[in-house]
Length: 344
Image (cartoon, rainbow, N blue to C red):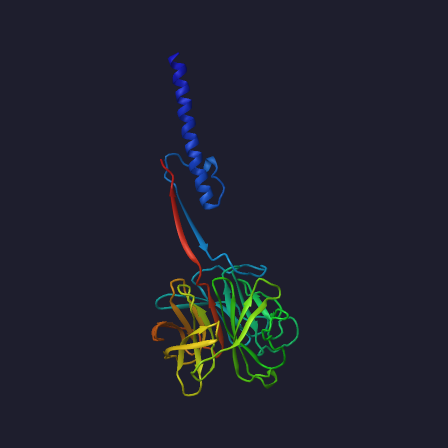
């Protein structure tokens, strides 16, 4: 009789241990989004550690349909420069910037106003009028989607909803420069463009446009003139600070005037100057990282980190020189790390 109860106790103890082990492995599987390890993958009496990283982004806002390989939301910066555009990624350290060519010729086009959409992990931009071929696809003023390999998808020309009263994009053979863009946390695409040809009707007009990316084609929500008391020719790029939501940019000043850092209010079109920026040439690309640090790409030198309170240059990293560039980054990614240990 004693042996009988001893066996029952042993089976009960074994069952409890088995259920406990299964519970632990199930917990790990749920945390890592992986299947429960097979029996021969587990070593008895060995402490296992599982590490999980996730990228968390705001879930509201619009996104367009996915096509090719997505672009990871990480610390890399992306630049489209020269004509036709070369598409490169930039990885930076305290003393160095590494440029990697993704596509050396974007369909023989010039792509400007590129921005990283953290809601679908693609880059979007516009075909500029410097592009030599004006036949479809990719005619000037076309919104395009860029994937991780530099493949472009023609997304059509955004226009306002019928009856909205919003000024449409002027479609003609004039030079409608697409100079700058950034994505807000809710997925709104903020784009700057400039009419510089007489047939555009508004010579030299710098405008800020907001675009809803949840429709196809995308819908222009607003299209307003940029107002500033400082004499300037254009704002080569803008970027949104993920810690505050403020939009920053460096304006290309009129002849003889210094470059100026400032904030753009998309509700009013007002650009408020913050301070001078001692760059050698135009800041064609602007970036924020997830910590709220501001960088601009000085086309005549390389990457500059700016003090966003006064425009002072904090750090400089030499790089490629170019007369034309536009850039973007993904500032809204949040990296989390979770660890779980299996009890012995």
